[in-house]
Image (cartoon, rainbow, N blue to C red; front, side, top):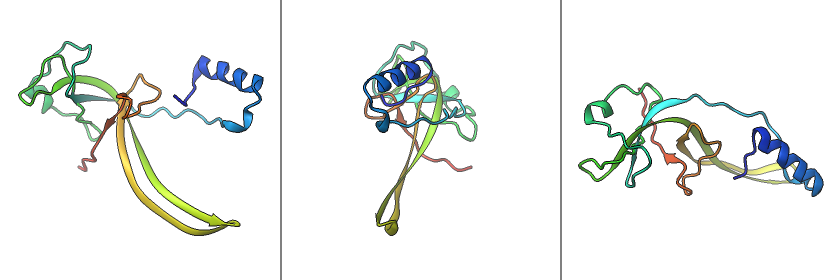
Length: 138
């Protein structure tokens, strides 16, 4: 990963100083996103052996509730379902071309809404740690 927090940050800063790589990193305040209870759906099982019934799945998840579903036993669609504590992230993609400080081209290219387990600092979708979401406006 590329995110260092807590004791890992101190160790990494010492490594940067020793290797004289300070021009390759920047520091910022950690953002603590809200945590939500959510249902996770996956085609593979995980360590959670609790099965969540259809009645529980249709329960109230809140405005920012996610529908990410995972469990030890597959449902009728061969999907595994479990409840997790998650946090969300919205990424906006764009492009910018400039010459000598003058902006020549600037466009927003799209967005990606994803969730990750709240206990993870990083949550990449390709690594299996994050989940792609859809916006549900109420």
